Image (cartoon, rainbow, N blue to C red; front, side, top):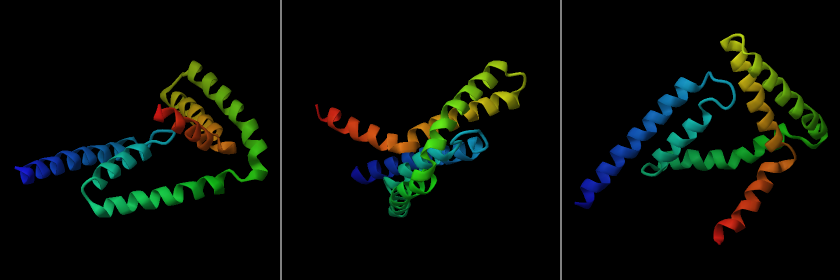
Length: 138
């Protein structure tokens, strides 16, 4: 019985992972992160039952912080602080005009990019995660 349950779990999680991976390919062209979150979710679902996928998840965790350090170097922090509200305002204006689908896409990209810059710059995302951890224990 336990063996049947294991195979059923394997089929369910691998099927959900495949759906997420296909969704990642289908949404990869969209502005913003596109299919990256779906790809990571699919890989995480595969990591439940497969050690090779768990190794890739651990590799992503190790290198994610280094990528942020390369992008948000201290000498450019003020540039990112200035760029964030400009990109957000530009995105809102473009979305409100939305004369065509490409303008709507560009506006959504600008808004998403400004949010990404805001949380990545000055390590706001790390501080947000640190502030949430103690509140989860209550």
